Structure formats: structure tokens, C-alpha cells
Image (cartoon, rainbow, N blue to C red; front, side, top):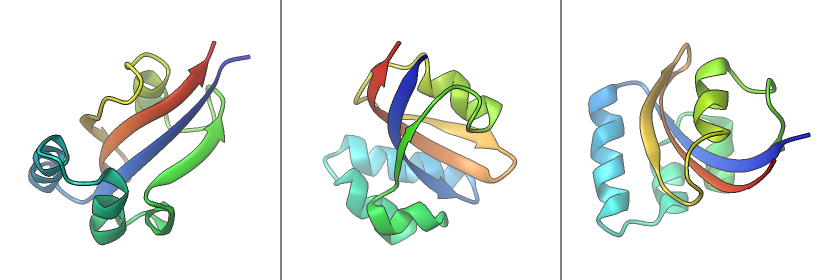
Length: 93
């Protein structure tokens, strides 16, 4: 069964999400940006969500996590919770 590990940053607006993505692409540390900005409890771990399989996260999340290239920041991804930046850190198919 497929498994992935990922980290994310959750914010309320698409504009904020794009601003943070630009900062990360400009060299800011993903984990530090998550700690400073993410509204998800995972922010305390730098946005780390640990390991999970398909169907354990919301659909929009799953679609990205199980198709995106590894170690490339994806987003904004809109879910019922807000806007996410996602980074897949590993995946086994």
C-alpha cells in the first residue's frame, strides 16, 4: 500500500499562502515558516504530518501528496480548512 510523509503550512488566505511560498522559494526554511505562520497544530513540528496512506487526508491533499514531485513545495492547495503549502518528503508506491 502507498505511503507518504509530508509537511505543510496552513493559512487563511491564498495571498498569504503565495507570500510564504515565495519566501520559501527565496531560501526561507520551510519548518521555520511553518512554526511562525501555520494555524495547524503541526506547526510545532515545522509542519510535519508524519506518515500516512491514501484516504487518510482530505481529497485535495491526497491528490497532491500522491502525485507531486518529492521535496518541491506545492500550493496553494485549497481545502475546507484553508490554504496549504505542501511538501512531500518521501513516498512509497
